[in-house]
Amino acid sequence: MKKVVMLALALMVAAAPAFAQDKKAAKKSEGAAAEKTMSAAGTVSAVTADSLTVKGKTGDMTFAVDAKTNVQATGASHKTASAKADNKPTPITDFVKVGDEVAVKYHDGATKHAASVRVMTAKPAAPAKKK
Image (cartoon, rainbow, N blue to C red; front, side):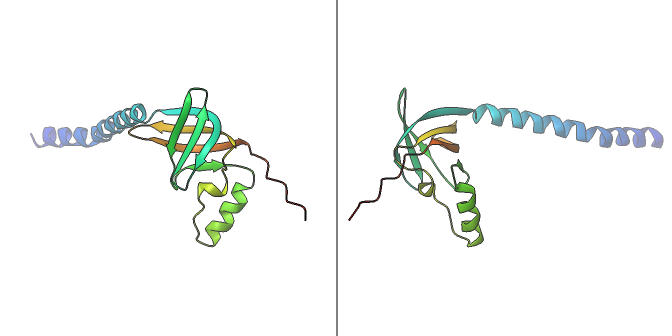
C-alpha cells in the first residue's frame, strides 16, 4: 500500500509542470488576442509629451505615448543614450515634429497606445534667417 501511495505522489509531482505550462500558454494567447498590434502611417498633425496625432488616409488618429514607446528617428539612439547617462527623460517631442511622416505600431484597447513610432521622413528644418 505504501508503494502505491508513493508511486501516485511521484506521478503527480512529475505531471505538475505540464499542467502549469498549459495555463501559461492559455494566458499568453488570451493576452495576445486582447493586445493585437496594428499599424498606421501618415503625417504628424500634433505631438505632446504624452500623445501623438497622425493624419492618415482615414482621418486623424490620436495615440497615447509613454516611456515604453520605442521611437526610431535619425539621431534618436545617441540622444537617448546621453539622456539616460544623465538620468533625464527623453520625451517624444525631442524626436518627432509636426509635419514628419511617421509609421506607428499600436495596441488598440481602451486607448490606442503607441508601441513604436518610426520617423520615415523628417520635415526639413526652417532655414536660418539672414541678417
